[in-house]
Image (cartoon, rainbow over all chains, first blue to last red; front, side, top):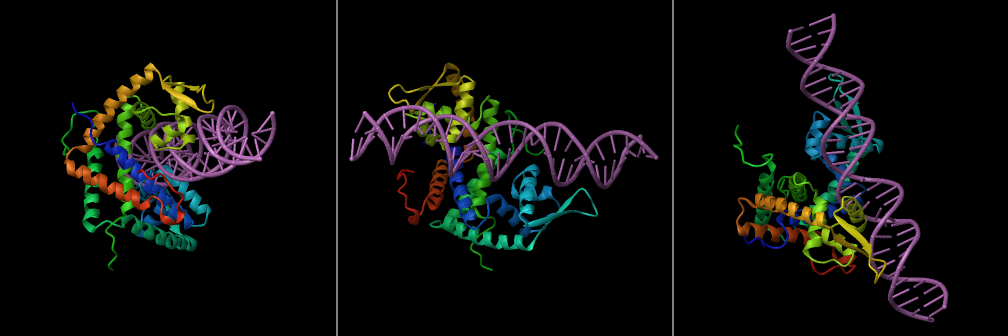
Length: 155
Length: 155
DNA sequence: GGCAAACCGTTCGGTGGCTAACGTTTGGGT
DNA sequence: ACCCAAACGTTAGCCACCGAACGGTTTGCC
């Protein structure tokens, strides 16, 4: 069974590239006085209103328990406030402060610059192709049949 | 207005996909009684001889300090032995034990299966295109001119 | 011969992520 | 009326990774 596919496994290439890009992005953000998770939280908050932390965590792509830590830090740094919703005391309402807003603007600048750097030398179809392929990979691992035997997705 | 970007930033798409794929790979490996870092270490050790831990760490894609932790655990689990090179007592020679070898074979099977799953629905040119685009992204963030600390020209 | 620089690996402290278990609050069921 | 389950967020404990500081070992160079 000819197994020698091209060099390192595909997933490894993906992981390595993502690691390098993520690292570079982190550097760019910290030069603007921020960090990757902080940026993601700010971005999600400004992008559209979220009703609770659970939703925010999902928008950021992390779990609720992890989000709590970041919100604690950001609140400590004066970027946002949390208060309980009087209508439903289970939920905590998150709102940016003025300095949170300022931090958002600073980081958005850095993020835009980075995005431009990342795209240099790529045509629009390249981007489109890349996004298509990434989605394909995501789908290939997304629905996950526990052990074996693919199941009908509709069920 | 004409913002040249479509949807979420490119880096975010990349990071999200890589996270999902990595997670799925981890699950596949742990079903075979392993973990991602353990697999990478075993794979690097079998792929070609390494002269010292520094080189091994670089092959795996992590730093020396991190590798130490994994080697400690793997040694504790009886997968490998470390002993000092008599010719140069600074370096620690890493060698797999029999059960380390067995673990390698088990995980290789799981990794191959996963790789097949990841590639399903992708033609050979798709793979080639993807690898080209990933390399491009990697290059776009790999150091730039100003900070010219003369890095490894390969990769 | 001896000392400083370079090299190799470990330890320490810190970040970011996860799961599991837990309190609080709310809304049913019975 | 009461109790129980679900929803929400926090806490506790784990893993992976990193940079910086540290001991031990050459090696280079007077």
